[in-house]
Length: 193
Image (cartoon, rainbow, N blue to C red; front, side, top):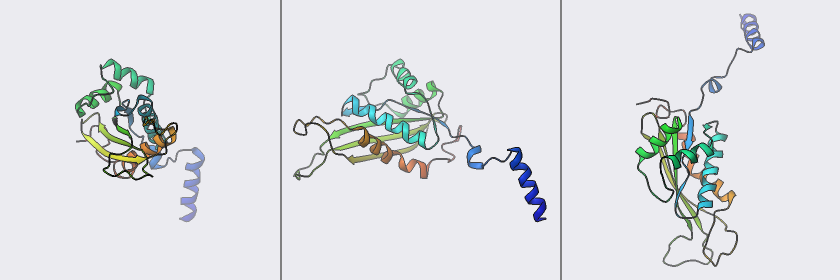
């Protein structure tokens, strides 16, 4: 019996037919809305959007092109300084033909408001991330994080732009629980109810 199983497995491997189950299941497509920003700047928001793109691509998601996302966003008449309800994000995802849509909002980049500022207080990036299933219209993930960073440039001016490495870490922190709690779930699957 051992010889038969080994011989059969060898034949299957030689034919290149054996596919690992994890590789067989394709990950959903993801559209990332350009990050909205409020008490932050356009460059920091762009860095966050790029950081999220890289995080999801590293996890094997088919992230739709940034140019197409920007064009669809503009084509819908959306602005980057306005909050939108989930239904607008879902409409964006459907317009892009994506299974999922990530809706990032960079709420603030700068020093946190505190009554007594310690001397070593570092600026923070505050990111709010929602991921919705474009087919069901349901939110499947939400997380808001505050991530401290070391600013470049003139600290006294109080005009902070999020450096690329800090934006990547902030995006990674916001999305990290998605991969352990939501990835591969029924809620993520196309057409789940």
